[in-house]
Length: 98
Image 1: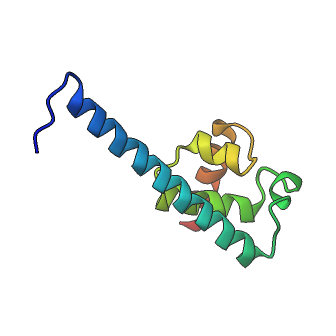
Image 2: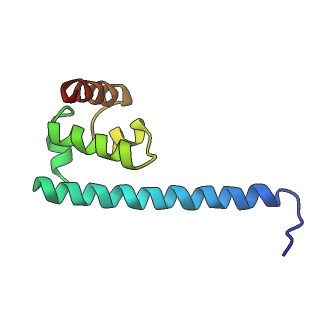
């Protein structure tokens, strides 16, 4: 099969990228749900706990390692302040784990 119209390749690649982002979002939500259960938290705990809460920082590190979410996206989803705040917390966590 041959697709012949202007922008066809871009359209196909764009659609693939969208599907990958959607799959990544589903994966991230599954990780969050699993970790919330493991921690014994409900979704509302994310807004009640401190930005630097060790459970939240651990979850953020797991999302960073296992998904392609940006630090900004993770910070927003886990209610951890700005990307800079999360980045600092992740660096501090990394320093204490070495």
